[in-house]
Length: 134
Image (cartoon, rainbow, N blue to C red; front, side, top):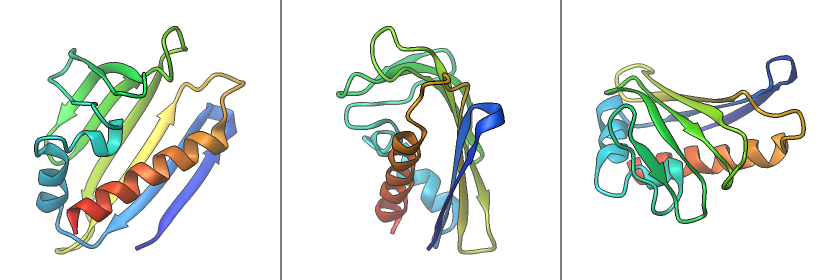
């Protein structure tokens, strides 16, 4: 299992990818079980339907923007109360019969965003998903 992180300065985004050695359905089920959304949102974070708010215990919060089972979860993300709204897009794809490719892009970052810190944050989140799916 390998994590790849890329920074795209011209589009103000951070991109992190991960391959999980488990079928797509198993990875999706891991995210959708009770408490599974906290793997990506942080402890206390629960995804709702499109347009529903979420908030994690660490103060991050946002709104579910797009939710396509076994394909995509997209949500706005505020690092703290009053922080600029950014957008996180998690794409899931089957990578053969027994593996899943995860691609997370955190977009619309302000110029002064801590891209290294965000990259580490999202790498850790994808690692938590991979570990929980196994």
